[in-house]
Length: 291
Image (cartoon, rainbow, N blue to C red; front, top):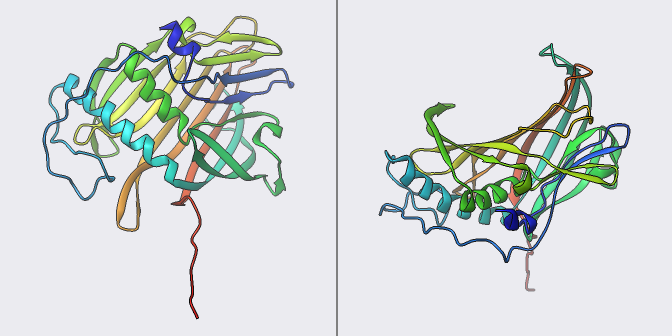
């Protein structure tokens, strides 16, 4: 297991600056050292026009094990389609007390995000009305990687770690199943950087999937341990996906996200609420006219 995360497939970055001293990051690395995944077995079915191209829908799967195999296959296809899209991302940042459900908004960060060669690309970055060269130039709590890297790493985790079936449930009217994985600190790709020191963050991840199609509907990560003396008690990260229709076809794409940092010692919290809108296909359109 440790070897897998020593060579993690992608960069997933959630950065937290506290007096310019702390950063929470995910480590990069090549992808040539993964154990082989068990083959997925998908029930035979006719293509459904409401599903993204290339997906094979399934009737509701009663077996949680069979459904998990379908999830693994569908996630690979969903991740692959992200390379074709660009969208607008809005990050609304807040501060408040842990004891209160309310808080005050600090600012709004907007950007255009695309997924190229397995990594998020951010451009046209603005903090309120001020242009910024990079998200890393913005102080406070911020995160990147929700557009595609969370989905990609979840697929990697599903290949090599034991998966626990939690329950059948309903998510916003969709019959769903919930799976979970516990990732220990030595195996974790979540890297907490304090000045020049690095700490692996153990976490629990939960995955909500459609019982009918195997599509991932929601991902959530919660830290299960933070190095003592840093003042951070917990970090929570989640993203939801939704169906997006373009040119008569439908894809499952990121919809909303939330990134929360809790500080028990000071009784405060910081959180970011994200939305992804205005999806369009990546690339340019060229019109040729002959006279």
